[in-house]
Length: 498
Image (tube, rainbow, N blue to C red; front, side, top):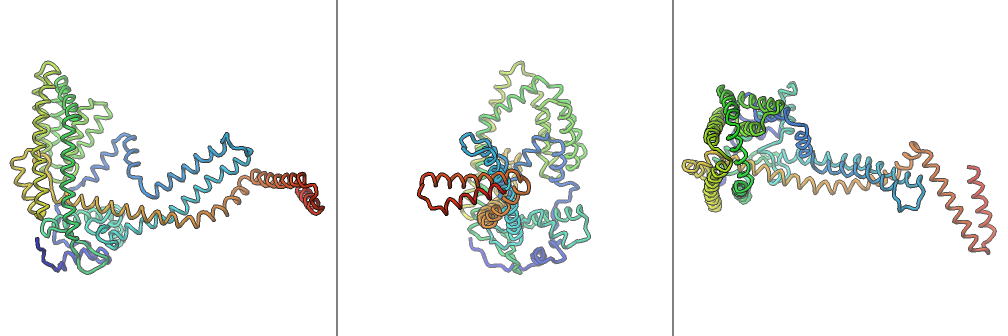
């Protein structure tokens, strides 16, 4: 497909450019994004996190807390706390206890200096890399100008509105983030590309066509991979899950129906944000009262359906899921034993696998279309047409342009992380020229100040070892001159004076 050269110097891009030149406007109001809900998905996530068990919160924190700086800290803590134990209590060592203690203390001092120097150099480096990526100074593979991160957007908002409160700055940053996403999706659909700001240039530039084509392919390939995994899960894990839930419906029909009626009443408000908030509260209440796990899991599934949406029409999908569950309760409660449940589930699973196979066939058709240079708009038209006859696609509600945007963000993040890791290695190596001499200077002074007995004892032992070595030399060399004896005698006197 031939693409003509276009001058992208239009008002909205001039406004976008001002993000990097501290202009007065962030993004032109020409295109108003449809993100007007009172609460966004991040607010709901934070609200739900309040009710999560501490173990889950800790695991999520550990997952987020990864990177070059964190690795340095963890390695240093290991060096400072674990290595001294093996040095101090090494049964194979022939040195005395004081000497081992003196050597063991070198490890925590070394670890502290490593954190001080390496982290002190790596953190500014990482921050600089992220800032340059947000400004488009590192090339397209690392260019974040179409989807700047929250920290950078808050910095821009604070610079342009120094009188704003912390809450106002956060709100302004979220608004800019939504506008950027809207502009990115518009570019994908109308220009079949992604527009970048590159190092303060006056006009935006389109993404390299080859890389854009590869991004489209990787997007559909990831969708094929996920759908294939879903098929495998239906053959194994999903089957067991459906049997367990269906058996619960058979044996707890009254309780299940009562809970489904409660969920139906929550939907009556018609406000997706209010519904999500009430669902989050309901989940917390059920967990605190130790309600049946199947009902809690089902409620969480309903919540997830609307977690990423601000569209009130999402409530219809939530209500449909509840209505289907009511049908399942009615059908399974009429069964007399578990064998009947298993037979019904197996038939249902086989039908679902057939739907997945049909969807996989369509995804492969999309992949072929991308290989033939079909545009994002044309691909989305294919999805629209297929949804009419594909029930699974109707359930998934796929927005292909949004999938491409997410895939591009992941690729950019991966490139930046690699850049920081490689650069961090060189930064850490460079700090060795500082940390090693610093350790040799700090350690003896630290020991003399904090453990003077160990420090002086070590000095005395070193001197005694020199005297003993000299005496052994005289015994093996009886013809040694008198000056050597005199020197040994003088050394002994000096030691005694000390």
